[in-house]
Figure 1 (cartoon, rainbow, N blue to C red):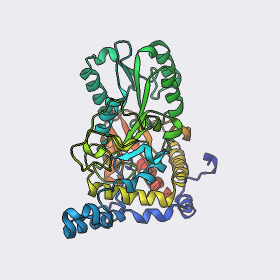
Figure 2: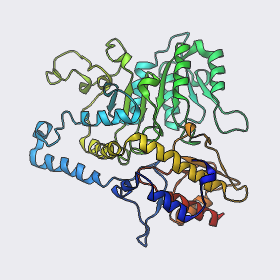
Figure 3: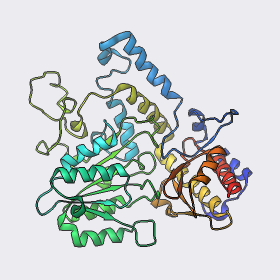
Figure 4: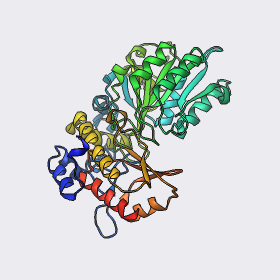
Length: 423
């Protein structure tokens, strides 16, 4: 939708909501309320997604089966616990554009990242460097630095940062190409956040994958801000691995279990180095405790432990909603509602705020990062007090993310009206 068609009125916002094919899904989520009992404007799904009303029912089922069946719940529960993680695989694979055999829900993001680097960061004396974007999420940087040190490399010499140009906020693919042209023979791994947590910039995943592979490096993506937000088409894009959390756009609850993708070309490689645990062992002989490790083909072979069922139940509840809504429809609304947010923000007079997220919908998800001139956190605090829940990132950015499953055009309109009043 072009900005000329937009109108800066509450009536226009309400009309868009009336015509929104996903509008019924808002009622399937708990929307936080203020002390007066009014719904808050919640635009923080990029940090923690709202709770689906289904979640309680799904978790309650497992609590009842546990209380009634004890250990027998592994096989006799309504949703048997032994194969429970498999109930999530197909729906999750659709959301990240992968084959079911390439996806597994397990552990948490940083744990999965370390497990993937055990397999896909295999440094040699000639090829040992890792590239990340300069403002990668801190956990990625810490994980990468610790892996480099573990292998005897100094991060000062072996960690390469893909940086924005001077005076800019966003990274240019051409600059990554230049890095690979000069350093490519020494690069063992490209590890890029698919959608940057700070700027909201979505990177060209296929081009990055092809670039890395062309120079003989392995390629992995952190989809913490991508899964459930953009469509990474992981199978076709072709990275060696990807990892993500499920509590942001995937609405699974604080600290919930993460996800992992391993491309099918690695599915049957038993020689690939990995850290192992019994849940990644051949399902037919898993309980015959004296067998040598025999990995399950595909992503499941990287599992370590039997999964936390209550957490998986919450993910399953959310994935049911995603499946009903259809990810293509979710992405279409994401583009539309974020375009409207951008239009409204640009209507604000003066130069106190600047959107640092790319304007091209192909280069972003639903998050817009708003840079505040001469900022401290006071404006953000006032916005929170005015009933708008967004989030603040030092030194001067307010992140706003209209999640298409539960946010409305009216939410976006109200947020900008309250921001204008404060400015």
